[in-house]
Image (cartoon, rainbow, N blue to C red):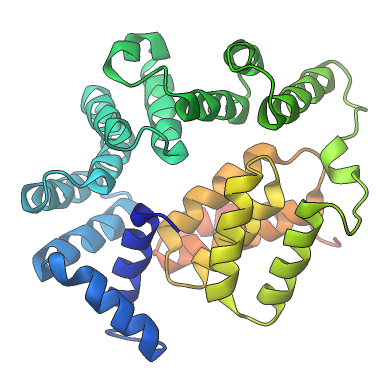
Amino acid sequence: MNGKFLFWLCLVVSVVTYSHTYAQEEQESAEVYLEEYTDEFQENFFEALKQKGIQNYDRAIDLLLKCKQLDSSNSVVDYELAKAYSLDQQHILAQEYAVKALNAEPTDFWYLDNLLHVLEKEGSPLESVKQDIPFTNQKLQQNLALGYFKMRKYNDALKVLEGLGSSKFTEELTSKINDSLQKKEDQKVISVATNEKKDSNDPTAQYRSQIEELLSESDFGQALALSKEALDSYPLQPYFYYAYGTALNNTSNANKAIEVLESGLDYLLDDDQLANKIYGELSKAYTSIGNTSKANEYLNKIKPGL
């Protein structure tokens, strides 16, 4: 589990203990990790997430800028500022902070994905910031191909993959892209991913089986770690986005859950049952942050009878 994720998880655990009782070991872990963060930072940061969730972007930005004053090198704050500025239609500032966050952690997929969406909203190509980021980083290139695939920019993704050489990742993503391109021409194409036979030698099936058992037992702490591991290893499998998002939802990290679950929708082709599950979790997550409009929007997307 990387440091940035621990930052998110531990901050959440620390705040929610004001109103909920958690396992003693979780509390102690959070307290140790959060010693360097002031109460003022925590209060401003979580109030900013709340304000962003209810679309009060100006207030969210002001609070995040206060966090920035308290911890100028925190890449999570830069990431959230980029999102808030983008939602507030302040594209130049959104791009500035998205670039800062990515430079702090060039291998982080979510930071690059955020930058791509910021650039798309302002109508700018990635080439406009190419010189400002570590563009040649191998992991960043993989994330870029994956990001283009999520955005359905299949030809751009293929161009990136051409420069990465042969690997399991490039072969699997190229196959996914070709399937998607074919589906645009022929709606009768069936997704290979959703019809793949599962057996004991399939590592994705093994992950799924273990995660399903943990979720059924409401062991969300273990499910959180295992689904994150599965998603890192197999970033093209929509079920792992659902599982990770569900675990986040049930460990009081609704904002991160929303991000993960909405990303998972980009990988769905013909799996209405899984789509329903994701919509349900998204409705739950938006409800928990007070955005009833979005919660109802996803609730209405659920197809009955599945």
